[in-house]
Length: 87
Ligand SMILES: [Zn+2]
Image 1 (tube, rainbow, N blue to C red):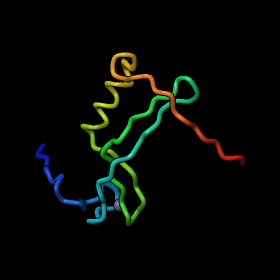
Image 2 (cartoon, rainbow, N blue to C red):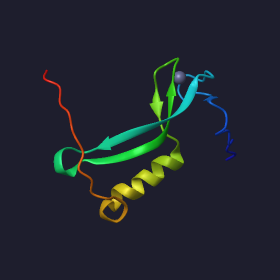
Image 3 (cartoon, protein in one colour):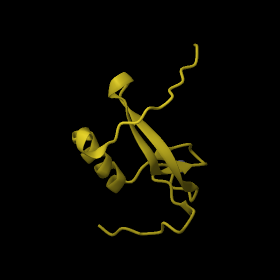
Image 4 (cartoon, rainbow, N blue to C red):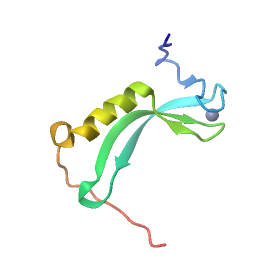
């Protein structure tokens, strides 16, 4: 499979709607809850302005799976502020 590397290009083709409207941004992704919550900081993430899809590449997904499989090896403990909004 051929992969196009166009990280310099701010807009790329959306994997969902096929439009040239997916921008690469840096986003935090959280998994789990409470004391088991794991935060991935500044993950390169595609956000499509046409269909509102938010997605990561397969390579990033694989790297995240590696971390989730052995979090004690790849994470550091940090005190963070967590906000909940009243429903
Ligand atoms: Zn899209």
